[in-house]
Image (cartoon, rainbow, N blue to C red; front, top):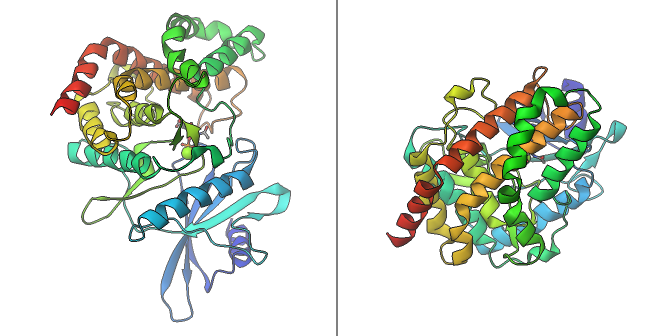
Length: 361
Ligand code: GN1
Ligand code: MG
Protein backbone atom coordinates (compact mmCIF):
# COMPACT_ATOMS: atom_id res chain seq x y z
CA UNK A 1 0.00 0.00 0.00
CA UNK A 2 2.82 2.36 0.90
CA UNK A 3 4.10 2.55 -2.67
CA UNK A 4 0.64 3.15 -4.08
CA UNK A 5 -0.04 5.96 -1.60
CA UNK A 6 3.38 7.42 -2.33
CA UNK A 7 2.76 7.58 -6.06
CA UNK A 8 -0.78 8.96 -5.60
CA UNK A 9 0.64 11.67 -3.30
CA UNK A 10 3.17 12.58 -5.98
CA UNK A 11 0.39 13.03 -8.54
CA UNK A 12 -1.33 15.46 -6.17
CA UNK A 13 1.97 17.30 -5.69
CA UNK A 14 1.95 16.89 -1.90
CA UNK A 15 5.05 18.30 -0.22
CA UNK A 16 7.46 16.23 1.85
CA UNK A 17 7.55 12.48 2.34
CA UNK A 18 5.19 10.00 3.93
CA UNK A 19 5.72 9.70 7.66
CA UNK A 20 2.88 7.27 8.45
CA UNK A 21 -0.45 6.05 7.18
CA UNK A 22 -3.53 4.40 8.66
CA UNK A 23 -6.45 2.65 7.05
CA UNK A 24 -9.76 4.18 8.07
CA UNK A 25 -12.08 1.25 8.55
CA UNK A 26 -15.55 2.76 8.59
CA UNK A 27 -17.40 2.96 5.26
CA UNK A 28 -18.84 0.04 3.35
CA UNK A 29 -17.88 1.15 -0.15
CA UNK A 30 -14.69 3.19 -0.63
CA UNK A 31 -11.19 2.60 0.77
CA UNK A 32 -9.85 5.45 2.88
CA UNK A 33 -6.43 6.21 4.32
CA UNK A 34 -5.12 8.93 6.59
CA UNK A 35 -1.67 9.76 5.27
CA UNK A 36 0.71 11.96 7.24
CA UNK A 37 3.62 13.74 5.55
CA UNK A 38 6.68 15.20 7.13
CA UNK A 39 7.56 18.46 5.42
CA UNK A 40 10.95 20.13 4.92
CA UNK A 41 10.72 22.05 8.22
CA UNK A 42 9.93 18.76 10.05
CA UNK A 43 6.28 19.68 10.57
CA UNK A 44 3.62 17.00 10.04
CA UNK A 45 0.62 17.43 7.77
CA UNK A 46 -2.15 14.88 7.25
CA UNK A 47 -4.38 14.22 4.26
CA UNK A 48 -7.24 11.89 3.54
CA UNK A 49 -6.66 9.66 0.52
CA UNK A 50 -9.61 7.87 -0.92
CA UNK A 51 -9.85 5.18 -3.56
CA UNK A 52 -13.35 5.42 -4.94
CA UNK A 53 -15.22 2.19 -5.65
CA UNK A 54 -16.04 2.59 -9.33
CA UNK A 55 -18.30 -0.47 -9.39
CA UNK A 56 -20.71 1.40 -7.11
CA UNK A 57 -19.91 4.91 -8.28
CA UNK A 58 -19.92 4.53 -12.03
CA UNK A 59 -19.48 8.24 -12.71
CA UNK A 60 -16.95 9.47 -10.18
CA UNK A 61 -16.21 12.59 -12.23
CA UNK A 62 -19.84 13.63 -11.84
CA UNK A 63 -19.56 13.03 -8.11
CA UNK A 64 -16.59 15.36 -7.91
CA UNK A 65 -18.55 18.00 -9.85
CA UNK A 66 -21.48 17.67 -7.43
CA UNK A 67 -19.17 18.00 -4.44
CA UNK A 68 -17.51 21.02 -5.98
CA UNK A 69 -20.81 22.82 -6.56
CA UNK A 70 -22.22 22.10 -3.13
CA UNK A 71 -19.06 22.96 -1.20
CA UNK A 72 -18.62 26.16 -3.20
CA UNK A 73 -22.18 27.21 -2.33
CA UNK A 74 -21.61 26.51 1.37
CA UNK A 75 -18.21 28.21 1.40
CA UNK A 76 -19.63 31.36 -0.18
CA UNK A 77 -22.48 31.54 2.29
CA UNK A 78 -20.45 30.66 5.37
CA UNK A 79 -16.83 31.63 4.69
CA UNK A 80 -15.72 31.06 8.29
CA UNK A 81 -16.86 27.47 8.48
CA UNK A 82 -14.47 24.50 8.15
CA UNK A 83 -14.84 23.13 4.61
CA UNK A 84 -13.56 20.22 2.59
CA UNK A 85 -10.77 21.09 0.19
CA UNK A 86 -9.81 18.65 -2.55
CA UNK A 87 -6.31 18.80 -4.01
CA UNK A 88 -5.61 19.03 -7.74
CA UNK A 89 -3.22 17.21 -10.02
CA UNK A 90 -1.00 18.87 -12.64
CA UNK A 91 -3.64 18.86 -15.34
CA UNK A 92 -6.15 20.59 -13.05
CA UNK A 93 -8.54 17.79 -12.06
CA UNK A 94 -9.41 17.21 -8.40
CA UNK A 95 -9.04 13.46 -8.92
CA UNK A 96 -6.54 11.08 -10.46
CA UNK A 97 -7.38 8.00 -12.49
CA UNK A 98 -4.58 5.52 -11.88
CA UNK A 99 -3.74 1.97 -12.88
CA UNK A 100 -6.66 -0.34 -13.58
CA UNK A 101 -8.92 2.72 -13.59
CA UNK A 102 -8.64 3.24 -9.85
CA UNK A 103 -10.06 6.64 -9.05
CA UNK A 104 -8.20 8.57 -6.36
CA UNK A 105 -8.86 11.83 -4.57
CA UNK A 106 -7.09 13.62 -1.76
CA UNK A 107 -8.47 16.18 0.67
CA UNK A 108 -7.45 18.05 3.78
CA UNK A 109 -7.59 15.98 6.96
CA UNK A 110 -9.71 17.75 9.55
CA UNK A 111 -8.56 17.19 13.15
CA UNK A 112 -11.71 15.97 14.78
CA UNK A 113 -13.54 13.19 16.51
CA UNK A 114 -16.48 11.14 15.23
CA UNK A 115 -19.10 9.10 17.03
CA UNK A 116 -20.50 5.86 15.73
CA UNK A 117 -22.98 5.92 18.52
CA UNK A 118 -23.31 7.78 21.73
CA UNK A 119 -25.29 7.59 24.93
CA UNK A 120 -24.79 11.29 25.36
CA UNK A 121 -28.02 12.88 24.17
CA UNK A 122 -26.33 16.23 23.65
CA UNK A 123 -23.98 14.66 21.08
CA UNK A 124 -27.00 13.12 19.36
CA UNK A 125 -28.82 16.44 19.33
CA UNK A 126 -25.71 18.09 17.85
CA UNK A 127 -25.59 15.43 15.15
CA UNK A 128 -29.19 16.31 14.31
CA UNK A 129 -28.25 19.97 14.20
CA UNK A 130 -25.34 19.24 11.85
CA UNK A 131 -27.46 17.35 9.31
CA UNK A 132 -30.35 19.81 9.69
CA UNK A 133 -27.92 22.67 9.17
CA UNK A 134 -26.62 20.98 6.03
CA UNK A 135 -30.19 20.80 4.69
CA UNK A 136 -30.82 24.38 5.70
CA UNK A 137 -27.63 25.69 4.05
CA UNK A 138 -28.68 24.10 0.79
CA UNK A 139 -32.36 25.02 0.92
CA UNK A 140 -31.71 27.87 -1.55
CA UNK A 141 -29.47 25.77 -3.82
CA UNK A 142 -30.89 24.66 -7.14
CA UNK A 143 -30.70 20.88 -6.84
CA UNK A 144 -31.51 20.38 -10.51
CA UNK A 145 -27.90 21.31 -11.44
CA UNK A 146 -26.65 18.19 -9.64
CA UNK A 147 -26.00 14.91 -11.42
CA UNK A 148 -28.05 11.96 -10.29
CA UNK A 149 -24.92 9.87 -9.78
CA UNK A 150 -26.72 6.71 -8.67
CA UNK A 151 -30.05 6.52 -10.41
CA UNK A 152 -33.07 5.91 -8.18
CA UNK A 153 -30.80 5.65 -5.14
CA UNK A 154 -33.62 6.01 -2.61
CA UNK A 155 -36.52 4.95 -4.80
CA UNK A 156 -37.70 2.49 -2.17
CA UNK A 157 -40.35 0.89 -4.31
CA UNK A 158 -37.84 0.04 -7.04
CA UNK A 159 -35.38 -1.31 -4.49
CA UNK A 160 -38.04 -3.67 -3.12
CA UNK A 161 -39.23 -4.68 -6.60
CA UNK A 162 -35.66 -5.57 -7.52
CA UNK A 163 -35.30 -7.65 -4.36
CA UNK A 164 -38.33 -9.73 -5.32
CA UNK A 165 -37.10 -10.15 -8.89
CA UNK A 166 -33.74 -11.38 -7.62
CA UNK A 167 -35.41 -13.68 -5.09
CA UNK A 168 -37.37 -15.16 -7.96
CA UNK A 169 -34.18 -15.78 -9.99
CA UNK A 170 -32.39 -17.03 -6.87
CA UNK A 171 -29.05 -17.44 -8.64
CA UNK A 172 -27.19 -18.40 -5.47
CA UNK A 173 -29.86 -20.72 -4.07
CA UNK A 174 -30.27 -18.63 -0.94
CA UNK A 175 -33.93 -17.58 -1.18
CA UNK A 176 -35.20 -20.55 0.82
CA UNK A 177 -33.22 -19.35 3.86
CA UNK A 178 -34.86 -15.95 3.84
CA UNK A 179 -38.55 -16.70 3.36
CA UNK A 180 -39.54 -14.99 6.62
CA UNK A 181 -37.61 -11.83 5.75
CA UNK A 182 -39.14 -11.70 2.27
CA UNK A 183 -42.60 -12.20 3.69
CA UNK A 184 -42.21 -9.33 6.15
CA UNK A 185 -40.92 -6.99 3.46
CA UNK A 186 -43.84 -7.98 1.24
CA UNK A 187 -46.28 -7.19 4.04
CA UNK A 188 -44.95 -3.62 4.51
CA UNK A 189 -44.02 -2.89 0.92
CA UNK A 190 -46.80 -0.40 0.22
CA UNK A 191 -46.25 1.54 3.38
CA UNK A 192 -42.47 1.66 2.91
CA UNK A 193 -42.79 2.67 -0.76
CA UNK A 194 -45.35 5.42 -0.39
CA UNK A 195 -43.06 8.45 0.03
CA UNK A 196 -40.70 7.38 -2.75
CA UNK A 197 -43.61 6.96 -5.16
CA UNK A 198 -45.09 10.31 -4.24
CA UNK A 199 -41.67 11.92 -4.65
CA UNK A 200 -41.26 10.38 -8.09
CA UNK A 201 -44.69 11.75 -9.02
CA UNK A 202 -43.55 15.25 -8.11
CA UNK A 203 -45.81 15.52 -5.06
CA UNK A 204 -43.06 16.19 -2.53
CA UNK A 205 -40.29 18.85 -2.47
CA UNK A 206 -37.01 18.12 -4.26
CA UNK A 207 -34.11 18.99 -1.98
CA UNK A 208 -30.38 18.44 -2.01
CA UNK A 209 -30.18 15.20 -0.12
CA UNK A 210 -26.94 14.11 1.54
CA UNK A 211 -28.14 10.50 1.29
CA UNK A 212 -25.75 8.98 3.81
CA UNK A 213 -26.48 10.64 7.14
CA UNK A 214 -24.77 8.18 9.43
CA UNK A 215 -23.58 9.69 12.71
CA UNK A 216 -19.94 9.10 11.81
CA UNK A 217 -20.29 11.43 8.83
CA UNK A 218 -20.29 14.41 11.18
CA UNK A 219 -16.90 15.63 12.38
CA UNK A 220 -16.82 17.16 15.87
CA UNK A 221 -14.28 19.44 17.46
CA UNK A 222 -12.19 17.30 19.81
CA UNK A 223 -12.36 19.78 22.65
CA UNK A 224 -15.64 21.66 22.43
CA UNK A 225 -17.54 18.62 21.07
CA UNK A 226 -19.42 20.96 18.73
CA UNK A 227 -20.07 19.76 15.17
CA UNK A 228 -17.57 21.10 12.63
CA UNK A 229 -18.65 19.74 9.29
CA UNK A 230 -20.65 17.09 7.48
CA UNK A 231 -18.51 14.78 5.33
CA UNK A 232 -18.96 11.99 2.77
CA UNK A 233 -20.62 14.00 0.03
CA UNK A 234 -20.48 11.17 -2.52
CA UNK A 235 -24.19 10.66 -2.67
CA UNK A 236 -25.43 14.25 -2.68
CA UNK A 237 -28.19 14.30 -5.23
CA UNK A 238 -31.63 15.73 -5.70
CA UNK A 239 -33.79 13.82 -3.22
CA UNK A 240 -35.95 13.87 -0.11
CA UNK A 241 -34.84 15.77 2.98
CA UNK A 242 -37.10 13.51 5.05
CA UNK A 243 -35.00 10.49 4.07
CA UNK A 244 -31.86 12.21 5.34
CA UNK A 245 -33.60 12.45 8.69
CA UNK A 246 -34.80 8.84 8.50
CA UNK A 247 -31.41 7.43 7.54
CA UNK A 248 -29.78 9.26 10.42
CA UNK A 249 -32.18 8.03 13.11
CA UNK A 250 -32.11 4.48 11.78
CA UNK A 251 -28.39 4.57 12.56
CA UNK A 252 -28.16 6.73 15.66
CA UNK A 253 -31.26 5.54 17.54
CA UNK A 254 -30.42 1.86 17.14
CA UNK A 255 -29.64 0.50 20.62
CA UNK A 256 -26.93 -1.60 19.00
CA UNK A 257 -24.86 -1.48 15.81
CA UNK A 258 -26.09 -1.60 12.21
CA UNK A 259 -24.93 -5.21 11.85
CA UNK A 260 -25.70 -6.58 15.32
CA UNK A 261 -25.93 -10.40 15.04
CA UNK A 262 -27.96 -10.73 18.25
CA UNK A 263 -31.17 -9.00 17.29
CA UNK A 264 -32.57 -9.30 20.82
CA UNK A 265 -30.29 -6.30 21.50
CA UNK A 266 -31.77 -4.22 18.70
CA UNK A 267 -34.43 -1.61 19.53
CA UNK A 268 -35.32 1.86 18.38
CA UNK A 269 -34.45 4.21 21.24
CA UNK A 270 -37.11 6.92 21.52
CA UNK A 271 -34.99 9.19 23.74
CA UNK A 272 -32.24 9.21 21.12
CA UNK A 273 -34.83 9.79 18.41
CA UNK A 274 -36.15 12.78 20.35
CA UNK A 275 -32.67 14.25 20.83
CA UNK A 276 -31.78 13.91 17.14
CA UNK A 277 -35.17 15.24 16.03
CA UNK A 278 -34.85 18.27 18.29
CA UNK A 279 -31.50 19.20 16.73
CA UNK A 280 -32.60 18.53 13.17
CA UNK A 281 -36.02 20.18 13.31
CA UNK A 282 -34.56 23.25 15.03
CA UNK A 283 -32.56 23.85 11.84
CA UNK A 284 -35.12 22.95 9.18
CA UNK A 285 -38.39 24.15 10.66
CA UNK A 286 -38.52 27.23 8.42
CA UNK A 287 -37.57 25.47 5.20
CA UNK A 288 -39.40 22.13 5.50
CA UNK A 289 -43.10 21.98 4.69
CA UNK A 290 -45.63 20.78 7.25
CA UNK A 291 -46.10 17.68 5.15
CA UNK A 292 -42.40 16.87 5.32
CA UNK A 293 -42.41 17.31 9.10
CA UNK A 294 -45.49 15.08 9.38
CA UNK A 295 -43.75 12.34 7.40
CA UNK A 296 -40.43 12.17 9.24
CA UNK A 297 -41.47 9.00 11.08
CA UNK A 298 -42.73 7.32 7.92
CA UNK A 299 -39.44 8.24 6.23
CA UNK A 300 -37.53 6.60 9.10
CA UNK A 301 -39.49 3.40 8.71
CA UNK A 302 -39.25 3.45 4.91
CA UNK A 303 -35.51 3.90 4.66
CA UNK A 304 -34.92 1.18 7.24
CA UNK A 305 -36.98 -1.28 5.21
CA UNK A 306 -35.22 -0.06 2.08
CA UNK A 307 -31.76 -0.69 3.49
CA UNK A 308 -32.82 -4.12 4.73
CA UNK A 309 -34.01 -4.84 1.19
CA UNK A 310 -30.71 -3.66 -0.28
CA UNK A 311 -28.67 -5.83 2.10
CA UNK A 312 -30.91 -8.81 1.40
CA UNK A 313 -30.77 -8.27 -2.34
CA UNK A 314 -26.98 -8.18 -2.16
CA UNK A 315 -27.04 -11.41 -0.17
CA UNK A 316 -29.24 -13.10 -2.78
CA UNK A 317 -27.07 -11.89 -5.65
CA UNK A 318 -23.70 -12.98 -4.27
CA UNK A 319 -22.52 -10.15 -1.95
CA UNK A 320 -21.04 -7.96 -4.65
CA UNK A 321 -22.06 -4.49 -3.50
CA UNK A 322 -21.43 -4.03 0.24
CA UNK A 323 -18.07 -5.02 1.71
CA UNK A 324 -18.61 -8.16 3.80
CA UNK A 325 -16.39 -9.08 6.73
CA UNK A 326 -17.64 -12.68 6.94
CA UNK A 327 -19.98 -15.03 5.04
CA UNK A 328 -23.58 -14.11 5.74
CA UNK A 329 -22.72 -10.56 6.83
CA UNK A 330 -25.40 -9.10 4.56
CA UNK A 331 -28.00 -11.43 6.04
CA UNK A 332 -27.04 -10.35 9.55
CA UNK A 333 -27.36 -6.72 8.47
CA UNK A 334 -30.77 -7.45 6.93
CA UNK A 335 -32.14 -9.06 10.07
CA UNK A 336 -30.86 -6.24 12.22
CA UNK A 337 -32.51 -3.58 10.04
CA UNK A 338 -35.78 -5.50 9.90
CA UNK A 339 -35.86 -5.81 13.67
CA UNK A 340 -35.37 -2.06 13.85
CA UNK A 341 -38.10 -1.39 11.28
CA UNK A 342 -40.54 -3.51 13.28
CA UNK A 343 -39.73 -1.57 16.42
CA UNK A 344 -40.21 1.77 14.65
CA UNK A 345 -43.59 0.55 13.44
CA UNK A 346 -44.56 -0.59 16.93
CA UNK A 347 -43.63 2.82 18.38
CA UNK A 348 -45.10 4.80 15.48
CA UNK A 349 -47.66 6.84 17.42
CA UNK A 350 -45.27 7.65 20.21
CA UNK A 351 -42.70 8.86 17.65
CA UNK A 352 -45.32 11.04 15.95
CA UNK A 353 -46.13 12.60 19.31
CA UNK A 354 -42.47 13.35 19.90
CA UNK A 355 -42.28 15.24 16.60
CA UNK A 356 -45.44 17.17 17.39
CA UNK A 357 -44.14 18.01 20.84
CA UNK A 358 -40.89 19.37 19.40
CA UNK A 359 -42.73 21.52 16.87
CA UNK A 360 -45.03 22.94 19.51
CA UNK A 361 -42.37 23.62 22.13
C1 GN1 B 1 -23.08 2.54 2.28
O1 GN1 B 1 -20.04 3.02 2.53
P1 GN1 B 1 -20.96 3.87 3.30
O2 GN1 B 1 -20.99 3.47 4.73
O3 GN1 B 1 -20.65 5.34 3.10
C2 GN1 B 1 -24.22 2.91 1.33
C3 GN1 B 1 -25.35 3.60 2.09
C4 GN1 B 1 -25.82 2.70 3.22
C5 GN1 B 1 -24.63 2.35 4.11
C6 GN1 B 1 -25.04 1.36 5.17
C7 GN1 B 1 -23.31 4.45 -1.98
O4 GN1 B 1 -22.47 3.71 2.74
O5 GN1 B 1 -26.43 3.84 1.22
O6 GN1 B 1 -26.81 3.35 4.00
O7 GN1 B 1 -23.56 1.76 3.34
N1 GN1 B 1 -23.71 3.79 0.28
C8 GN1 B 1 -23.93 3.53 -1.01
O8 GN1 B 1 -24.02 1.19 6.08
O9 GN1 B 1 -24.60 2.59 -1.41
MG1 MG C 1 -21.16 6.99 2.19
